[in-house]
Length: 213
Ligand SMILES: [Zn+2]
Image (cartoon, rainbow, N blue to C red):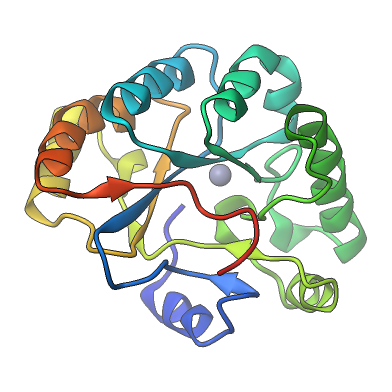
């Protein structure tokens, strides 16, 4: 979900190793990221599109959905994308105790480890809600949060065509981490138009690294 610009700026002041908001600004790489999946229909369609375009991305999945659709998660890993931790139930962290928040993240790490054999994953809390106790907890454990610098606002758009037009007008720049969602077909529809154009312009799309930059 959207973050208020001021909060985004404040997060940008934190060390990149703790809260990453963008990748290297030099070069031609952008980082697509998808929250709230996996979805049994939309995520595979998106994976097909990424494969056709030679693009890689990061999927911040909901642990419970990963349990429900394991074949989709297997594909995400097998095709070279990054699996990220978007909590187990996608509840609002602001209304939970630190203990509950950490339990959500730990449970999801466990679920995801069965797929990618990594014990820990990049974290993106639901709605981007990073509470101060959680921030301190993660900093002490050197865990890395992955935010974004470009909010596609895909959840506000009714059609992929509308989203594509908007993103075409104001495309992500080098180093941007692009926030999108794979629990609807909006992002996939928009990217089916945009990705071929962007690739033709020489843009590369990579997964975030498993560790913070
Ligand atoms: Zn979410």
